[in-house]
Length: 311
Length: 314
Ligand SMILES: Nc1ncnc2c1ncn2[C@@H]1O[C@H](COP(=O)(O)OP(=O)(O)OP(=O)(O)O)[C@@H](O)[C@H]1O
Ligand SMILES: Nc1ncnc2c1ncn2[C@@H]1O[C@H](COP(=O)(O)OP(=O)(O)OP(=O)(O)O)[C@@H](O)[C@H]1O
Ligand SMILES: [Mg+2]
Ligand SMILES: [Mg+2]
Image 1 (spheres, rainbow over the protein chains, first blue to last red):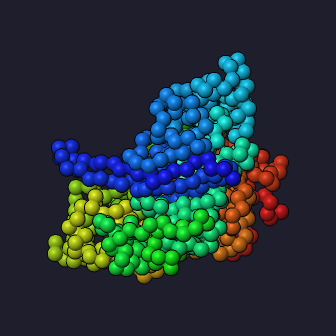
Image 2: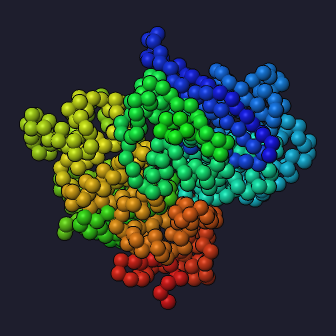
């Protein structure tokens, strides 16, 4: 399997001013040396709690925002070396679906305009046939002709998310990034949209990055899984491997809570130079306080934790 | 508490629309009842009607709420004020009634004791600190002097729970109390609620859309769809054998059993386009002619189980 995307040591720090009048500011390390790979026709699931940097990663990978450091290779091209003008034609091959179908669609545009915009932008078909093309794509996401001229407010959340997916796949991308695309939907609609993602992935031989804080969703949709905590990858590997043999205390905690519904945590405190999970960890030792563990292991399964025998 | 045939309407530009219809729901002493349903099905409206906190655009069309021998919908507002907070209290989804940002945690926790029980300052403070300890703060004296923004979401929800149990209510209504929290804090709060209910022998009406929570928390389950409770069962039986096609669909949509996922077709219609007959029939795989014409009444399957569906009974 070829590599579609390879990201090396991506970092992004935000500065937050303490207050409007203050010159002091605090830094938030939203991404801290994150490396990942996505192979052809493979889905990488990213899970982590709120604020762990999942959306920042999505935005940086698609260069909707520039990372501070790192490399992004997309189909062999080093994206950060390109100028915006050189980048633009490449954008057709990488698309995104956001969490909130209410704010991600322009309320003043009809479905036909929303979906045809990228098609026309990249000159994929001529004006005369674009309507037919849009109808085809809508059909493939489960919306019939009657939706072509609707406005977003005339549709339900699930239907809007289908339109957002249609817009993302109409340029036939090779990489689709989905940032919590089902989190705002009802359970019965979530299931429909998840099944739709699987279907289009099969039909179109897509590669996907799928972000969710729900491990059940991640388990359903992905081949590989990455667990993030405070801007760092703490564990990563084949799905079955991660779910049957979770190594990092945070991954185990997530599994305990979301699959089995129990568990315990302790308070949260940050310590400079320590492991990112130090403040929360039940098993922390001396070494964890003074040194941050690196990701370690094989292609199949890597973990950043001193508790693991590999260290 | 017993809700009987409760129907509530809401006023819109086009007239009154039915929000909940013929809701029957009984909670016994010490029992946890989970009311489950998707967004907009009427869970919050049901809860708010019990406490008579519905906004002015709503009206109760008929029904009663019996609580310890009295109909809460019939007593004067003065009486009701004595019941709210003291006998029945409520914990909301955090964003709705978050704490007052400019008052210290302690001030807000002791207020109930001062206002309702008329306790002196010192005694109220002691009681408040005790309470903070009971909801799991390791250092209640320190928390007492902090402001809401110094606490995490889960900790704020703890404080709200402390306030809501301060007067020893018999019934606590929790409306999606953990939806804004991450999984770990979520289960912490749920464990806390569970132990409080046990220790204080309270009953609880727990509102949620999350079947994973329900499986770990409740005695009895009511499934709501478009303003109707379509099925009620004891918890263990429900997860073994859901009767209503909507309940079955929900369970298959929610990763409850392994990884298979079979979505329910279609989507929830809005209140203006409520279908005739059984409200679920356009999405149902077992729909019959009868379902399109008539709305099914509750059919008793066994003690503790009933379902509104023509597939059962005769
Ligand atoms: N534009 C920004 N300016 C300042 N800080 C930001 C900005 N965007 C994100 N952050 C901070 O960076 C961190 C990571 O945020 P991010 O949105 O990537 O998290 P996330 O994992 O997507 O969380 P969620 O599950 O809530 O969507 C957070 O602490 C956030 O507050
Ligand atoms: N003030 C209002 N005016 C008009 N309709 C309303 C009003 N408040 C609620 N509704 C409608 O009443 C119905 C029931 O609402 P309710 O808030 O009880 O739903 P819910 O089950 O609590 O949903 P959620 O899970 O989203 O909280 C919904 O269809 C809603 O649109
Ligand atoms: Mg995000
Ligand atoms: Mg509600």
